[in-house]
Each structure stands twice: as C-alpha cells, then as structure tokens.
Image (cartoon, rainbow, N blue to C red):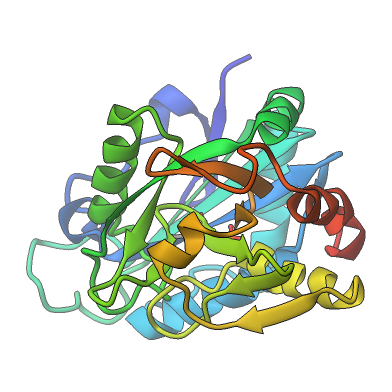
Amino acid sequence: MPRIAYVNGRYLPAHDALVSIEDRGYQFSDGIYEVCEVRGGAIIDERRHLERLRRSLDALRIRLPVAPSALSVILRETIHRNRVRDGIVYVQMTRGVARRDFAFPPPGTAPSLVVTARSLDLAGNEKKAQQGITVVTVPESRWARPDIKSVSLLPNVLATQAARDRGAAEAWFVDRDGRVTEGASSNAWIVTPDRRVVTRPADNGILRGITRTVLIGVVKARNLLFEERPFTVEEAYGAGEAFVTAASQIVMPVVRIDDRPIGDGSPGPVAKALRESFHRHAEWS
Ligand code: PLP
C-alpha cells in the first residue's frame, strides 16, 4: 500500500506529493509543524496540539490555510488512508510559494499545508522504555525562540546526530550556566534522590511540550512533589531518575547521561508509573 500524503487540497501517493522549490519552507524554513500521537485510531490531545499550532502560526504571522474543523477532518482522513492505528500524524504549514525574497510574500499568497501519518512500533517502543535510553549533553545552540514549533531544526538535527555518533538516543541542550534546557526532540525531566519530580519552566527557552503539560497534571494527581525549575547537568548526573517526554515517546526513561548511570542504571519507578498512567489523563478524540 503506498503511503498517502495530503498536499494543499489533494491526497497523493508519497512519491507524487511534491512542493515547489520556491516554497518558503524549503527556502527559509519559514514554517511550523505539529506532531500528534495516534493510538487505537484516536488522536491524542488534538485540541492542545492544534492550539499550539495556532500559537506557532501567530508568532510567525502565517494564517491558518484551512478552517480548524477542516484541519481535523484532513488529519483523520490522512490517518485513515494510511491505515494508522498506532503512530503519529504530522502537520506542516509554511508561508507558501513565492519568488525568493526574505520579506513576506504579497498578501493573498496561500500558505502550504502538508499532512502525513505513519505507524509506530508500539511493542518496540515499550521494549525501549523497559530498557531506557541514553542521552548525551551538547551546548545550546538554537535561536532565542524554541517555544515556536518552527521547521527550522538544524541545531536539533546536529545534536541528534551527535547523540547517535556516541551511541545515544537523545541529546540534551545545556545553556551557558550549565542548565539543561530540553532534548533535541523532547522535554527533559529528573527525579531527585528524595523523589521530587523536576522539569524546567516553559518560557521562551523551550518548547512547551503537550506531553509535558499533561504529565504535570499526572504528577500532581499522583500527589508526587513537583518542582518547575531549571536543573543543571551536575544535578541530573546525581538524580535518582531521569526521563524525557514527547508525543511519539510518551514518558521514556533515561538510564545514562554522558556515560554516567542514572540511579541504579535502569528505568526508575516514578518514570514507569507516569508512563503507565499517561493515557488515562490525555484527551482522546
Ligand atoms: N521539545 C522539542 C524540541 C521537541 O521537538 C518536542 C517534540 O517533538 C518536544 C519538546 C515534546 O513536545 P510534545 O510533548 O508536544 O511532543
């Protein structure tokens, strides 16, 4: 079965799903994206993801190219046409196609909209979570607005490759003061030796992950002590547990950071319990 992509009003086999070389996403990474988890055929936390998509578009002054209700239909149709039960649906919007010029194109230029969906290996992810992943730290090298989910991801690409080159799954960015900002494609968390769950405040310096937002609710509902504050790499090395959150991974335990074992070097009980409860707190639609 060929993969199907939605491109500006049409559902096309992936090999025919093309955008212009003058698309501003291609020329300038002048666009934004969203990724939602699909589970059992339902979209997880769609409302929150579409709200964040709206905020990213507003920040870049790109208009939503279709009505919000139409976007929901397109997401579902793309999931359906690709027969995804468990996986992700990806949305990308750019400022559209125009002759190359940094300044915005003439008003009326239609933004481009692409939607794709693909299956994820749930059993494989579960196995990964049972083993835990390793993380390496890299200097923060991104622009000042990682809170906008922009397709401008070169530092994230380089950081992820640096992680892979060192046999790790994820990279954590570290600011000049030695504090962890977030992962290349996830938010970063630790659990202190006295079992306080810590994650950095969502200011302009990180993406406000939807999984992060929902998980803060889970942490509070389970009466765990929660601290929204920065933490350093040194504190992470000495943490009882560490984990990352993202729509495609939910809660993924981290068992090594820069070759140092975290806690006893295996996934911790807090991360496991949070992973297990997450979907009872998320919105299904
Ligand atoms: N931070 C970054 C840089 C990301 O790319 C992502 C997701 O891909 C996240 C955090 C987690 O966000 P969410 O939980 O909304 O998937």
